[in-house]
Amino acid sequence: MEFIYPAIIEEEEGFFTVSFRDLPHALTDGTTYEEAVEEAIDCLGEALASCIVDNEELPIPSTATVNEVLIAPPALIAAKAALYLATKDAGLSKTALALRLGVSEAVGRRLINPRYQSKIVNIEKAMAVVGRRMVIGYA
Image 1: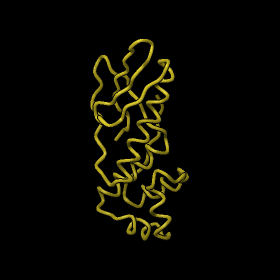
Image 2: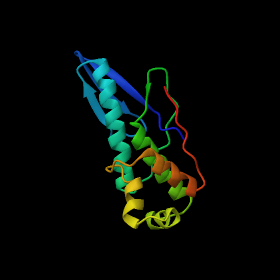
Image 3: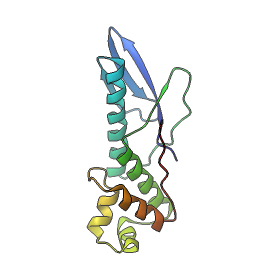
């Protein structure tokens, strides 16, 4: 799954607001279009992180319409979101993930926790133990 979400950026009186159709609670703004896009990246990351922390479903990104732009979250959040979904798909708890990795439960929890700065190589190893792999791209 790619974590690239469509967003609407609207200008009103020299101010730019950003909203995500798939994440209605994710709203942000900027004084310039460029600032609004940068804020949208951060906002999307925080919205996905919130879903992970609260153990909620991550919304599947919709197809963008003509008036929408595509926004990707920060890479580490996307990696942790992928691991979060992969462990759920495999029916594994964070404890079971840690056991498969041969690490402590705390280390296993931190790999998925979006508030913790994990190394990508460790997330990649975790993806492998649940039978998935991480693919990196650019836009």
